[in-house]
Length: 469
Image (cartoon, rainbow, N blue to C red; front, side, top):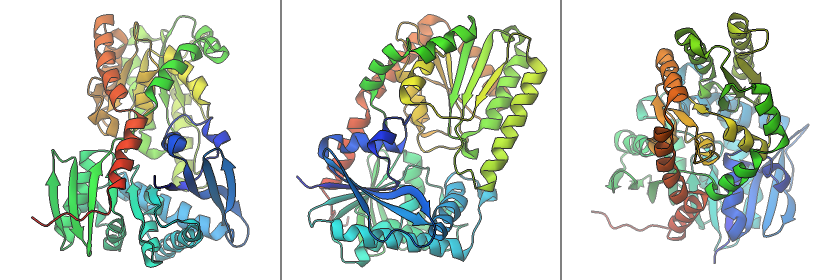
């Protein structure tokens, strides 16, 4: 069997991964658990001077972690700059937040070339290389430039914008050409795949051959033939179900239960980011209390939002905005024995969060745009099937295309989300059980193992040589 080499911007060592609440770190560890191989990327450390000359290698069972410390300039231009001030807002449909300049674009290309230089000596001829996310779009092309002919796949964890938005980026054609260096390009949803295919049709001389109900497409562009396909990422459903049964009785969960004093609980868990729709979410909770005053002093909203990218101005601004909103809403509605919003800027381990999810009557997941959003799936998996809570889910989260039994909302419609919260808090037990059971059937059949196996199986069959129709 070919060895799997996973490349991601950030490499989470085993100790860190155990504390992750979801997302790429958990998914990658699950993907490598059975196959073994190499996980290569940035260590998360920023150092003065130049980036690390050779990767640090750490063995952990079947895995080899190969990590690199980034120099301050590389980190600023590649990570804070082009990746997170240009591509992130662009891929989340936020043109007004895009910062574009040649210096950060050149830094992005330079760091991708540097990563390729450091991984290439570690590769074997029959390796399969699986590259993750928007930070590393040029990585496969850089390896190809160095003569690497291994099977290479790329998976995008963010949305992919339609061509009308993507063309706002200078050198957008280069970015798509770099994507076409891979044999397999994976997306979360059919919407993302459609955006990629539409770009190929409109902006290149390439060809698109659709297969299935827009689940996959053969792309011929820039002298390459590749497969673009939908692979919705998921969670370790069975493990989370098991964890939640015991986590609901943990010390932290008991403390939370006691502090509620019989009140209902709405929970949101998100990285502090403008794509998550947190100001709109706070406003929707305020709308609930205003429109349905019977919930005053009877429901508490717990928002966990650990900060990220704390040196990026947009993230500093949203943290300040949310603190002010929480203070204003609490000042307006609080009683001497009740605070409507509990807003926490800190992270919790997976076990603690599983216990919190288990207690919550409503899971509020309302991003303005999200590739998938695994919190939605985690919340559902952690519920007690005999008395489940209700998921209120943004139509703009990738998860909405799989979890249609949730209460699907438009996060920009503040009053509509407030009404959905009212419906969730008053939903009869029978309807809650039916909706939860349907979503669990999806999560049990489309779990993290299915995601891993379906992607790796498709990559195993690369390179593709589809005959032209």
